Length: 385
Ligand SMILES: Cc1ncc(COP(=O)(O)O)c(C=O)c1O
Image 1 (spheres, helix red, strand yellow):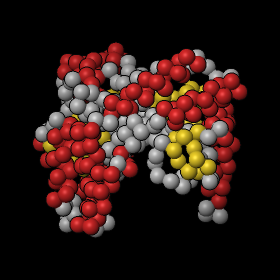
Image 2 (image 1 turned 90 degrees about the horizontal axis):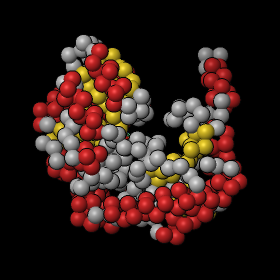
Image 3 (image 1 turned 45 degrees about the horizontal axis):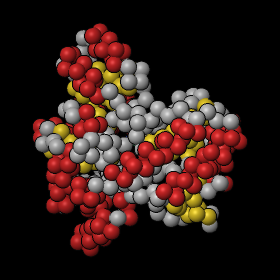
């Protein structure tokens, strides 16, 4: 009796076509993956630079296990602060061009930790309507007043700020939007922030290693400075964990006030070592260049097929709309040998179901061609635009 509500809730989710099931991959996160005994082209990876299997990255992770074991065994402020973590934070700060950095268990925890530490009741957060769920949850946890501005609409942002009487104001935006692949208008956001004395925080989860002269992300791409630079180690950096980069004072404050840092263990040593090695590979071998070449080829072909593409990056969604149809297209792509995921609400707004495709630097021309052939076939079959 006590738990009967669960059956009802699950049925509701199923009736709405929103039931989620785990799909199992029998290989690593590579351009071709194994699933149910078949090899599929992987158009659904956040391992954008393919570094999870780079020999230097793997070697560093293995060496770290040999030296430190498999776990930090504690939170950083207790006994889990190995020299390795100090090294990782220094490396992130140097890579990002900031004074300091702090590492969290995940990117999700970094967003929760920083937003709830720097804002509270009486403060104002202004957040883009398409920001990631971890930002939304961080805003809820902060107890600050939250106002959502229309996607990338800086006049809406300015209007909200001009009407606010709050002392402390924080603007938060994704750098590259995770389900659309478009880029936040950071120069305009920073200008408005200065006008109204607001702090700016950018989530660089999908931009780190990808955008900008130094591959630092969106701020680097536009050559502007932001107050709080958030990111994850789990996408282009081929590892696991999250971070905030910024001034020494900000990082010092977060060590003392960010609850998801204080009360949670750090990523395991091999994850820290892998991230350090991945940054070094990005700096020395510049795998990002090949990613952009692949993106150009792929986007050009989709546009020639008649898709309207507004993505500016390696994340390229094919908009479908209807939830059921989105799932059918994903299934058909898989039948044709291509792995993608149908994205439905609440991850995207209602009626905006999509196939989120993403490219990797390590995709070969053949992989891309196979992906495009399958997309061409589903476009015909489902009459996609
Ligand atoms: C924009 C954005 N921010 C934060 C996160 C959370 O990062 P992590 O997977 O390290 O928790 C994600 C992950 O999907 C993301 O897309």
